[in-house]
Length: 126
Length: 406
Image (cartoon, rainbow over all chains, first blue to last red):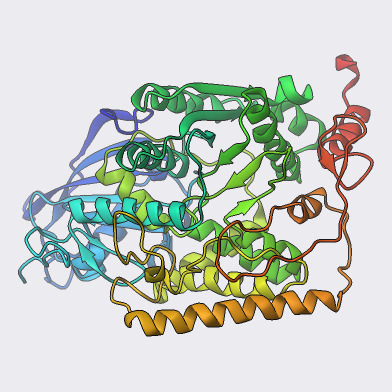
């Protein structure tokens, strides 16, 4: 019980795709398990720098992150396995710092520097 | 906004919101209540007896890994006296099953359980890769499903075990109920709701101890207990119809989380109206769970979405129990009117008719069944037809076997 998801490469991808060096950024750790890592270069753990505010100057939320992941991090073309009708696909759980995102306001949660956000698919074979 | 506190211990930070009753729990209390509820399902349905050898159908996926972990914990905590073994089926799908079998092998070490792996090639002379090579990807899930069902039974027999538990969860059961409802297959709908299936004196009994556990909670349990499981999709296309039923369930859950257990309970209620159906053995039936307190815990809403742990007192519970009994009796009376069931082309259909009547379930009337069960001419496996489903599929496969292989 020591190893979790031993089948996935445990190395971390650090992504520094902030478009503009002047934009202040937040550092977040995003993890994918339960089969979702397949959509993100078979990497479980990604360390990302994301802008602190969205286009309209509001603090970034989980909704923003989900879109950001689709545009910048996902290598797979099958976006519908992650997003359906502009929302996270039902059956994917989100844990924000280990807490169910339903306790944190779901998509409206404002991301803090250093947050750990885990996406777990429940849709894959058991 | 200060973090929410656990609804049970009131001290730790809540990390889980339970889909069935919106209760907010900390990690420790969640793990405890999840285990307590599975324990409740096991004791109220009298799934095991002391000294019984039980094979856990283990795929390396989340459900069977959680099942193995929980059963090991409960067997030790509540002294069931059950002898647990891991039983895995190797369908022979390269790049899919190899990896998950590695997970099962690690689980065997982690849980200190013996492991038996049975291959389709040794049972049927065909791996799934070879089946797909012959028939293509379309419809191969039928073969795999029929083969797997028998494979678990045969594997269990090889080990001298008469009881196989599988990791089917509430979402799986709800999904199957919906599929059978959409197909108009009421006999099968009835069987799919049973916690125990396929038992008779000589054959292998199947049960689903996680029948009332949400998939979401299974995944969270695995996460918070840091269990080692494997997740991948079968490389051959998933069953399209089941996929739609699954999406439907997940969409319903999003709007109304209790919907999953509600579908399970509705399925159980409908099952009682199906002629010849065997009422489920869980006496509490998801409604009056506090009527049968287990030896250790009182009032765990193990099987229902309606009661968390509140409960409206014993009178309400008694009323519900009486209603349930009446319903079962009504179902019993209806069978005497002998409604003709349409078609028994499925061997699975007959399997359930040989089920033993529930041993406990106070007041529930056992219903006589009319079908006779034969055995397959070729392999001796139970079947309503001359040949069992697996042998029929094998027949057609062998006719089409590529020449090189003959």
